[in-house]
Length: 256
Image 1 (tube, rainbow, N blue to C red):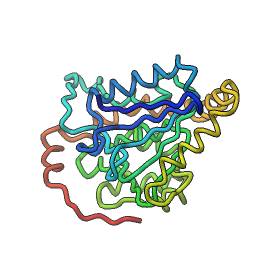
Image 2 (spheres, one colour):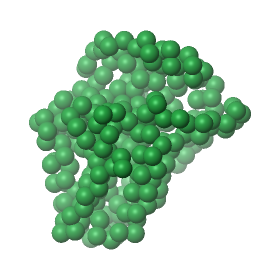
Image 3 (cartoon, helix red, strand yellow):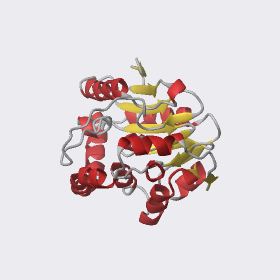
């Protein structure tokens, strides 16, 4: 199992932990399927009224898709299978609040999860970046999700700078991606505290508010997502060329 799920029936809070620290909590196909099943199970579990999502270990919250995962693609440029499109709670029609607790790195496909969380709490040493352009890939869905939270110029810089630059938790807070920065090791406890408060309110009112907040942005996202597969198909380098760039990746980066 790639997820650890614990639920406190007294508080109504469930904690979902991405549990692949040896892979920096990268998401393979099994993990993607477990996340989908997890969100759908929560829809029918009335003892869970709020959820905290985090990653195991100190190095990373999530580093996106596991590059060792085999993801067969159709040969037609008009079709694309993205295994991350169904890993988020909103994609699975879950309207219970989800709070992300970020420790270490959050990059690339992690934004599919952060983009569908209600808000993000981060350790002071957390960092955020998007490696797509460095490896010859289009940052499409990731940038679209980020555009719902951050100013356009900040999203552009994050997406275009690739692996050359990371933003720290403080800068992420200044730009709206993160709602609270905690001392090292404190993000999970702070997120659970928020979730416990929210879970103590009437569930219908909370879920209606979550749905209202999402309604304010889902129309724009739907229009963006309709273009994403074509942008990816046109702009991505062939897989073998991406692999060459990934193998030759540079370790130097600046943190803002």
